[in-house]
Amino acid sequence: MKRAVVAVVVLAGAFLGYRHYDKSYSPVQHYKKFAEQILHRQYDAASELTHGIAAKDLEKQGSQEKIGAGPPMFQTLFPSRFAIESTEASADGLTIHAVQTVLLNPPGVESAVRPAMYAKLNQVVSLKIDGLA
Image (cartoon, rainbow, N blue to C red; front, top):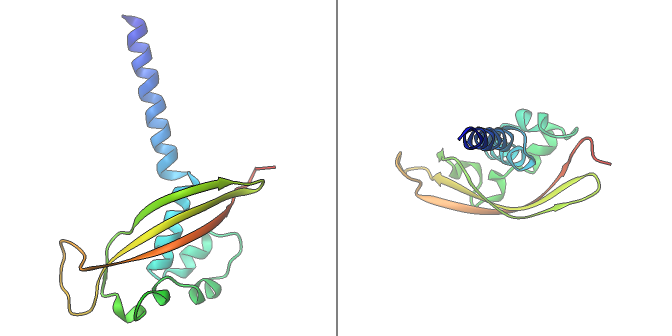
């Protein structure tokens, strides 16, 4: 009986540890946070998540500028959805192939419950991971 309790406690601890890692430290979560910062045009915050890319450079590459009519089209933004299609490890980091689905309401549409429109952004992101060979 004691072994069963110990096994359950160990499994619960491992699960909680993994969830904590996945929510706060994983490279995929880092990418998602960066993509949301760019989408919301918070370039200074997004720049802090990079290895030396200036906020001015990120502003030139912003997500909203690449979708439809540009920033005037975004009256309300909802949290994005992400589909990670693949990840490839390399000698110094990770390459993520993902689709970011931007959920939005255009001007004149008032819907607090669900978005009226969506846009899909195909993205390839290279992450440099410190500590790798």
